[in-house]
Length: 390
Ligand SMILES: Cc1ncc(COP(=O)(O)O)c(C=O)c1O
Image (cartoon, rainbow, N blue to C red):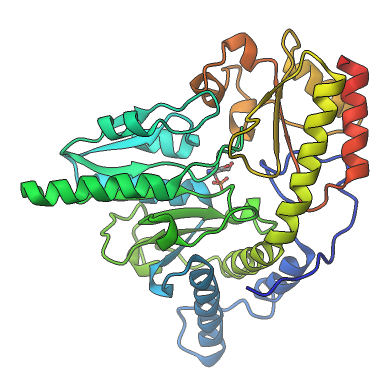
């Protein structure tokens, strides 16, 4: 993949440290999308040439996404974001296999957990860093398991899961099943919404059969996303109608969203190597600063595989909401949990799953970096943290 230099990047987001919740739209992506709101507004299913050109644009976006995932365009389904793609993957499989069960990790996004909870579902535990316990995962899979869903990277603590290793375990189980004459398939789905800016997305190397992506985390439009579905998999649609997206996602296509998603993914992947190296340095600098200046701080994920943009810290005895509001007053935007759980009073299920007490969970802060984060801005945030807590 051709590398591109950082461009169109301004510093207006200097005090923003919540990139795991939302990323600002790339100016390049916005420019590519714009014509599809106005002069190129046609319904891609219409017969005339102008509409057929819009269809071609969609298909070329599909091919671009497929190339990045190392798969074929016919296996790419455009959706309205990550939640819908996760619902389609899980409910699509489970509705077609009503007597089967599924296994999901304890730290999945709610769109996975709540979809899976509609069926016979087992929860695979994680260790104190959020890494899946492979031995226990293996034990949870039985003769009736049709689907395993494990996220690629966690949205709260940034833990990266060993997907290829999990896929290997599933292949062994499938082999044993075949020998016993059990023809039930065993599919592997991953929610990779937090991954594209930092990790490769080659589905065959990862060994996944389905993969969820969304545009709102990769400097593209919100309510845009993709579900990669291996060609032999049969899903039951969530939405019925005109049969768009191979009948899996009926409704007139969100053309600007699709075009924007593909452009955002392409740009993110092209910037990935530079960004990972840059953000890892910032992450390390922040770790050192916090450890040296705020002795009571406990950093989650040190020494484990973690996304380069994630810094998850606990300040025992400190009320995280209060801290977040104090930082907000100074203009710094950080998170106390994932954007969806943050608004409720219930401690995060992810932090509970890694063994934190309610009290510990309520003293945790999530700081996530992105394309616009630079050393000076991070320095300012760390100084404020020190003055509030050091
Ligand atoms: C890991 C993960 N999965 C799924 C989602 C849901 O994606 P969307 O907001 O596009 O529906 C998010 C967004 O918060 C996420 O971080």
